Length: 590
Image (cartoon, rainbow, N blue to C red):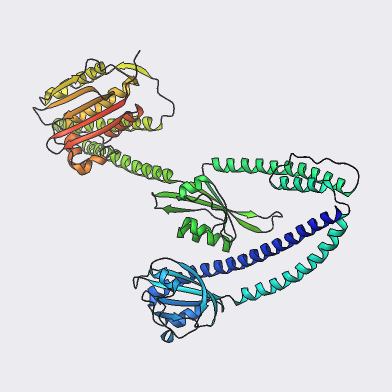
C-alpha cells in the first residue's frame, strides 16, 4: 500500500511539474510575443499618423531621412512601400537596392486594405522578424503602406535561458519529489483523497462542503484548516459578488455615462449609458484601449491632455454619428489606496443636446418677442410724439393717429396674450382637469364667433359633422381656442366670395377634425416651418395685410399635443390649405 501510494504520489508530482513547466513556458512565450506584437502595432499606428502628416505637408522629399529620424527605437525597423510593392523608404537599407515587396504576405494583405501581422525570416537582415503592415490613405496619393518590423532574437534568447532554467528546476523538483513522496507516503491515507476532492470542489466554487475531522494529527489539522478556509472564502466571495452587483447596478442606473480608464487609457469600466451615448456596440470592453473603442479625436486629445498635464477640467464636444449630440465631459483622478498617486481617470459624460437646443430656442424666442414688441411700441410712441407736437389740434389728423395707436395697442395686447397662452402650454407641469365635451357643440360655438367676420368677406362657412362623432376628453376651452385659431387663419387668408369647410369624421377608429380654405395657400418649402413661433411665409406682406402675431399655429400645435393628437397640413399655392387633426383612438364613452 505504501509503495503504491508512493508511486502514485511520485507520478502526480512528476506530471504536475511537467505540466506546470510547460504551461509556464508557454505562458511566458505567449506573454513576450504579445508584448512585442502590442508594441509593434501601437508604434505602427503612431508612425503612420506621423508619416501621413509629413507626406501631406512635404510630399516624398527626403522621406528616407525623415523616417530614420522618427524611429522609436533601434530595434524597430520602418519601411514605406507604395501599392505596387516598391520600397519608398527604409530605416536600415537603401530603398533603391531593395527588391519589390509586392509578394511579401503582409504587404499583399495591406495592398488589399487589410492590416497584417506576420512572423518570418528576413533575407535582407538575415534574422527572424515580426512584421506589421498597415494600409494608409493620404491626401497626396490614393494610398501607401507603412510596415514596422522587430527582430525576435531577444525573445528567442529569453526562451532558451528560461528553458535551461526550467530543466534545472525540473531536475531539482524530481529529486525533492522523491524525498517528499517517500516521507509523505508513510503517513498519508484515506483523508488525502478526501482533501483532494474537497480542494477540487472548492476550486469550482462549492464552499458548503465539509471534511470529517478525526484525530489530532497533521492531516486532521489540514482538514480543519480547509473547512475554515472554505467558510471564509464563501463569506468573502459572496460579499464581493454582492458589492460588485450593487455597484454595477448603481452605475448602470445612473442617467450619465461613466467610464473608468487607467493611466494607459485602457478601459477599467464602462456603463451601458456611456455605450449608448458613444454608439459602442461591443459588450466586453474591459482592458481595451479607449481610443479604439471611441474613435473620436476630440475626446482622445482631451483625455491625453488630462493624463499628461493632470488637468481635470470639464469640456464639451459635438458627436456627429449616429446623430448630432452635445456631450459634456467631466474628469476626475482615480487615486491609489494611499491617495498619493493617480492610477487612472473617471470620466462622466452628460448629454446636454436638449439643454443646448432649449437655450437656442429661448434665445431665438427672446429675440423675436423683443422685435415683435418693439414694432408696435415704436409706432405708438411715434404717433404720440406727433400728437404732442401739434397734430392733436387737427381733429381729423388726431382721430386718424388715435385709430392707428388703438390698432397697434390691440396688436400688442394680442401678442402678449398669445405669448402668455404659449408659455402656459409649454410650462404646464400639472395635468389639466379632464372634462367631457361635445365636439359638434364646441365647433358650432366657434362658428358663431366668426359669423360677422365671414360675412364681411362674403365667405361661407360650411360644416360636415358625423352624427355619432360624440365627445372628447380634455380642456374644452383649449380645444375651442385651437379651432378658433385655425378658422381665423382660414378666413384671413381666403379671398372674398370663398368658403371655409369644417369636417369632423371618424377614420380608422380615430376622430379627425379638418379645416380647409380655398385661399392663397402655402408654398411647399414653408410647410415644415409654419408651426414655428413667429414664422410667417411672407413676413412683410402677411404682417401688413393680414396682421396676426405669428404665434397662432404654434399654439395650435401645442394644444394638439396636449390632447395626444397629430396635426398635419396639406396646401398648394393659389388653391388653399387644409389642416387635419387626428385624435387618439376612440374609447368607450360613458
